[in-house]
Length: 226
Image (cartoon, rainbow, N blue to C red):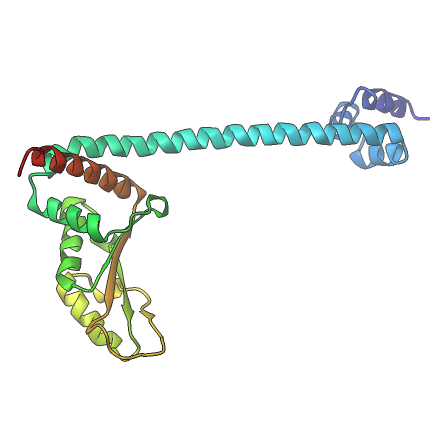
């Protein structure tokens, strides 16, 4: 028996992995596999090392996820704090209040999807939200997008022309139109429904804070009013 095989057996019985033994003795891993392939005691060591490795990996993953969650929550709280500081100034702006009230009534309420989105059949409402996003929230125009929901008898190009002209959103930022096909594909809305949206978790966090602060002010100022 080779001398290094005796050493390999000794190290293996010390619960050393193939990688550690190979590195320490300079013996190829394939050779170690050959030496220990029929050794039951080595297979038990392998199972134990695998179990420990999986345990350590899971523990490390939990720590990584915890750190990521804490980092993400810190990031969100920073934007919530910024929204609280901005609110006293912004509430004096009529466009801010108009956009906020419209979003309160018609906006997407699921914060998890990170979409600031509003759907409506009124082109002027979409325009106000567009101006709110652009001039109050300082969202670059190219990030503000739209889609239409139409019935099949409506002309897509004419509808896009109307919505684009009224809302000031260029036609090239209107993405794939969704058509509603039902048992009665007759015209129900003259120009369909427009969805205006921007992907921004930062802004959505801020809007939710602004809404809460505005609601609190409304209740406070309305207290005692008959």
